[in-house]
Length: 452
Image 1 (cartoon, rainbow, N blue to C red):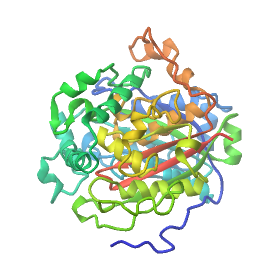
Image 2 (cartoon, rainbow, N blue to C red):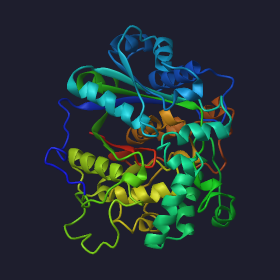
Image 3 (spheres, rainbow, N blue to C red):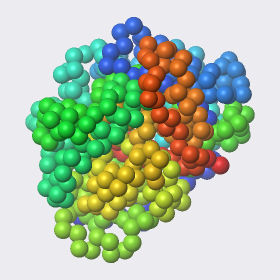
C-alpha cells in the first residue's frame, strides 16, 4: 500500500504572485490544410496580443518577454522533431530560452505549470505559453494509434491501440460498482455539445437528444461515438506575468492562485490500493464504510492529488460553493464523471448527482465546460489545457461575449452565429478552475484562477 510522507503532501507556494493577462486561440477543425502550424500559432498569438485590451503594442510586448514554454503532445503528428524551435523562431522570440513540455493529454496544463514556476521563482517576468497540435496530416486510424501510445504499450495496447477501449473498461467497472446508468453519462455529452453551439471556435457543435445519444453507434461498449472527444487541429496561447508586469500589460489581470500536478502509473494494472486521500470538504469518516478499494480501476489518484494540492494552495474549502465555473478534461463521458468525484464535487460513488442535480449547467451553482469542452469544441492535445484556462480567463475578465458573441468573429471562421445564440457569460464570477488530464490518469494538473 502506498503511504504518503510529510514531504509528499507539502502544499506548494509561489515565491511571487503569478498572473494571467491575455489569451488567444484559433478555431478548431478536423483538418486545416490551408494553414501551416506556424500560421495557426501566429493567429492565436495575434489574438492574445491585439484583442485582449493590452496596454502595450505587439512590438513592445515582444521586447518584454524573457522565457517561453511550448506545448505539443506528439512530434509524430507533424513529423517534426524540435517543432518548438520552428514556432519560437516564427513568433520572433529567438534567442530567448524556451522549453517544450510533453505529458500526454495534460501537456497544456503542465506547460502552464512550467510557465508559472518560471514566473513564481523570479526566473522570468513575462512568459508566453503556446500550445498546438497538427492532427490532420495522418489518417484518423493512425492518429488514434499515436494517441494510444500514451498508455503502456506492453499491456493497454493489447486492447486495440485506441483510448476509447481503455476507457470503456473503466466505464464498465464504474457502472458496475456504482449502478450508474448510461443515460447519466449521455447527459454530459448532450450538455457539452450544446454549449459548443455558442462558440465560434468549436469543431463539433450540435443539439442532441437523449434518444440520439443512446442510439448512437458504439465505439467500445458502453461508449458511443458521441461520448468520445474529437481529434482536432489548432492552437492556443496564454500570457503569464509577475505582478509588476501584469499591471503594465493589462488593467484586468487575473491571479493564478494555484496550479498543481499529480501522477500515477502508466499501466493501470500497477495501481496499488491505498488509504483514500481526503479533500478539504470531505469530513473524517466519510469513507469508513467504502466497499471498494481506492483508487481501484474507477478513480484517478493523479486527479485527487492535483486537487488536494491546488485547493490547499488556493485556500479552497468547498469547491462547489467557492468556484464559479469549471473546465474539466471531458475526453470521454466516463472520465468526466470520474473527475467530478476525484476533485470533490461529490463523494466517491455519487458523481452522478453533480450532473443530475443541474449544478453543472449555465446559470446554476458550478457551470462546467461552458466552452463546449473536448466533446463539443476541441482536443488539439497540446493546445487543450491552455484553451481551458483561456476560456476561464475571459469569463473572469467578463469578456466572454467579446470573444464569442460578435458576428464578425463567427465570420472570421466562415461560420454564422446561431439565431438562438445564448450569452454564456457567468454573472460576476470570482474564481474558476481547469483540470488537464493525460492517459488513463497518468498525469493531471489543476489550475485555480481568481479575480482580485
